Image (cartoon, rainbow, N blue to C red; front, side, top):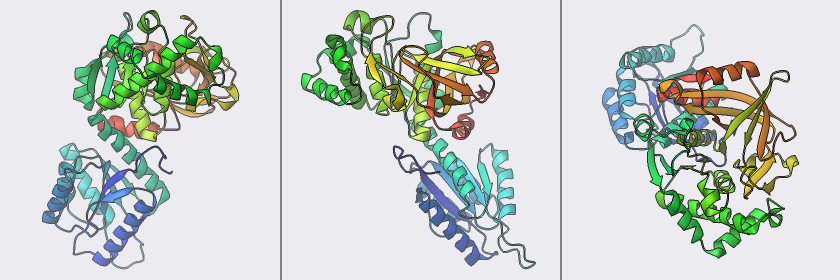
Length: 451
């Protein structure tokens, strides 16, 4: 597995533990091999290059790394050692813990490393202390083990980003849409997310004041992707493009990682345009946006994006075909254009109910997708997880649609959604991020629910 081109290199605090009564040259050789394999796999490493062999050295290493932002603490059990060193590292360095033990050849001679017993001794103490961890037992450079490290580091990256995340919420969710309820105290307490409240009408004023030269440049770029913009009503089309620029500027000023926007009715009734196209364009640029001020939806999209470095968007599940064992996703038109099936000839369109532009119209491209939702159903936060195959299928409705087949039967999925009382929005991204999401849920102490 290679890192996404839109995701920064994952940073690992790498520390090798050993005891001097074992074969230290061989232990250092194993540590050097693993370090080289991690660098070759694209990770950025920090931490001492030599073996850490006693508690004072472990304390010194821990303190030197305590304030350094890392995505994973990887402790390599280069030889047997007692649990004091791994404990002080795990308690001091604020990053998810990953343990690596290595086999050695059984040729009837000396037990040179005893790495497995060392990791076993350490995890007993970690469990007593309530410190979560993951592990592999593999030789340095093992491809599957390196993939496990990457998955753990991706979860660690999302965990670290959540702790410093800033989400903008424009207006409030519509009446009767409790599924979009914002509990900013709980988001801050559980995840560290800071909520920035933005007044809807202030955004409107910013949109009205956008420099026409900026709008012209945005339009020129969008014309390359949507060939039919000239056929749409131009004043509301320009309004949507101005909303895009205004929200983009606000996001930069406030250092926002995502936006939850009350998209109706005021965008239509007061500003005279649709927000959908603007939210699509921002999401395409890796500023995830949700409609109906769905804060938990935006947080879910942020998580999915951080895990795989690719766009995520929120959609409605609007139909199930039990005979074909398929489901239909639909939304007005805020999906990012990067998710479009090229064969669907993406185009700009109007809102199906409000009859104003700009919305994106296309079918979603085929491929494996992950579905997720930070849900508040039942009165506690949980993480809903699902996997499906997006199929090459004709558009079911206007706007943005996709036909998919879940890993589980469609009727079972619908039963789970209805009987669990889940929200009407679900977030999707392409690729399989279920392993990393599962690790992240454990780090956050979040129960999970499978679709």
